[in-house]
Image (cartoon, rainbow, N blue to C red; front, side, top):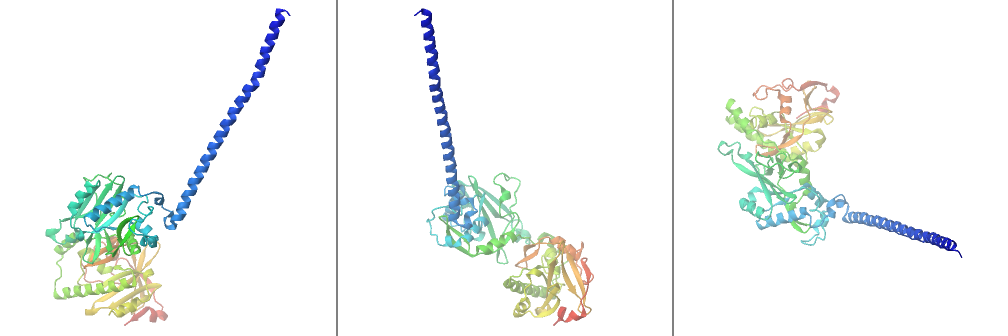
Length: 490
């Protein structure tokens, strides 16, 4: 064999070896690719299964916790939540200082009320999961009655030693506005105590003459840090508020012993309608400086009788569950001079016609106030008048709501003529008048100007109910065939 032939054979064998190695390398490459694909698929499948488990677990817990809590993300937060820890520390603080605070937070009270049987049957320290106090929120609202607070300043220092950052809101005591020498006295209205990202809002309730509780407006003064907490999210303090004095009961909530209103439903109903308007004592003093008050025997006697009549009417309507407010001359007397107008000779109340109850007349009769006259009917221009003692009359006007205004009716007995008194729409606020908690129109000035015009500050002793009011207009005449129903005199 020649040398050239030998070299050719060696070259061919080398090429063949290369050719035979290529399939093996290709096979190993494909094997690695398949393993990566399988691994990726397994990872994806495992992740999907894990997400499914989490989804299922969440909905399982929601169903287990019941409808009342299913809407709340708080059921997923445990006892390590800042909300629960802040409330626990606050309760420890108040209990150690014998400060009788009670829960008024609308969100928490609503949850407790929906699940009250569960709460009632829970003993102290037996909670296995946090269902109420752990719901996400910025504040938890508590209240106390100020006259029961014995160590205010000491409490404040201890709160800060426990880690709370506290802000105190004070203002002048409105109960003393009518007394010149005491009108500048300041009282505490609100405390906000912050622990980390959660804050306790302590609303300070003060007793008022009408045996109700009042809290003041949370007004930020110039030196207060506006970023201390999100003040706009506070449930209480946007305006002064008035509440019935609640009975309290002790319950265990998420392992903590708390006081709550015994009737949480009633308290929750009060919250959105609690706005309070103070009598304008300063303006009343100015009025009496210009127009001397009538302190004759007759005027004093009338005011006494009118006050007693108003108290009796208020008790009677409250028993019936009928809302009412000071209207006409009685409302003017409250707004202009913080007193009953001595020459008005009657007491005027307003009632929305949808709040009318058929047993109003019998209830007043049983209270010693017989019906004097009844004009109109429920569907149109109803007006009732009751005879009080000492010839003082109680007039009740029923108000009807239209698209853009409200009105009450009047009837002339001898002619059957109808009249209509138009008012801009209004809502109701609480006030204190002759030592009673009563409703007045929140939009008071608009209400009074509608009835008495821009000159309402000037006393007018001669008043024609058919012509004097600027908001009166003719409203037709009752058919003679209906007079027996719509014109009843007693």
